[in-house]
Amino acid sequence: QVPEVASLLLALLPYCAAALQLRLLGKIGLLLKSSVLNRSLCCEVQIPRKLLQLLASVEGQPESERLQGAVLKVIHHLATCYLLLRTLLLTTSYLLLTTYY
Image 1 (tube, rainbow, N blue to C red):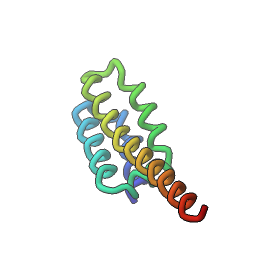
Image 2 (tube, one colour; image 1 turned 90 degrees about the horizontal axis):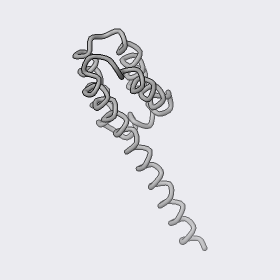
Image 3 (cartoon, helix red, strand yellow; image 1 turned 90 degrees about the vertical axis):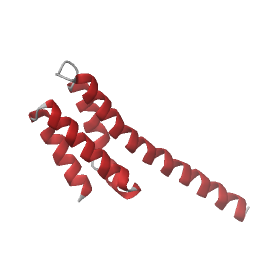
Image 4 (spheres, rainbow, N blue to C red; image 1 turned 45 degrees about the vertical axis):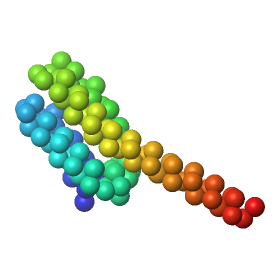
């Protein structure tokens, strides 16, 4: 359910006041921070692309610096997942190679 909720919240964001956008981004951040599975599933439904589009669109809006900071925090959670998964894959590959060869 998390990817669909995050996607829906991001779709609604441009229609909300800046204060509500900040609250919604905080909620999305909490959803992503809560588990690696949530972050992974959100990546599958292109949440990172949507966040980058949102980052570009908030420039010039009231409180744009705070909004950009909130978007960057959410992107950070997703980047952490990507780096963690990549590190796990590399470590697993290394262990498999050194164990069998």
